[in-house]
Image (cartoon, rainbow, N blue to C red; front, side):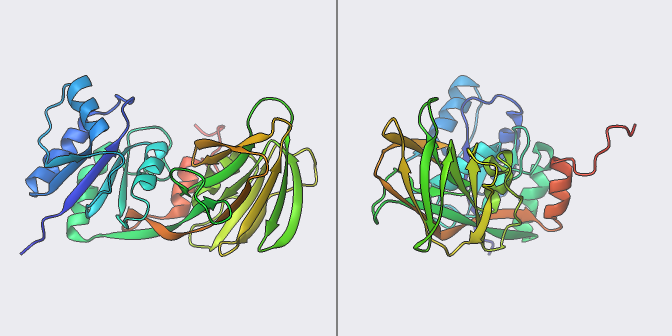
Length: 296
């Protein structure tokens, strides 16, 4: 007897492009007798704002634990990161459907959802495990959700002067950055904020993190790649006596003197990829490597 699968669907409430794909997905899953759960704010948006008629098994709140076999993220990479945060420790594999723009994490196109869901039912897929980060201070949780799939950054809070960041790795002093901030990124996040600040692209499953300064006030400060079993300690000084901690874009204000500790999270984020997926092909396509605008 085939097991009845449960799918938890996440989405954002400001994107109206390609809304028909959510109806296609729920119709497909309904045909497979699946249990369909949708995050309540997203369901309210679809049914009230967009007047869609969706037949589902139930809803779940943004703050409650989610119990499902698979999660589906509807949107771009930003929505995918929020989904990964909400199910952080639940060990649920995520399928990312890209209804946004450029998608490294959400890489299933709307017209490919039927094939992707069929592959799940047929077992014709792989799960790629991605390392996550955790932030704390002296063993205490300093934010509501301390986990990040892409990156954790300490940044200046205002537009005034730069901040001073004293960094150490595994108890050994590394360097003091005079900069607008410092990014600690996973390989997954190496194509995001870190890349825009001159950091390298790092292949997932390499067991590394990268420290990338933001607008450093020195020409000889460069990004550095370290082992992902390292513990990074940051002490920040600021003229405004506070600074920002950005966890996958979610910002919290911390006071000067707060000791920031960043290390590998005690879980991995599981991302569903169809068999035949190749990272380098994706990079070449999305970053247009080798593209020659002179060609017609």
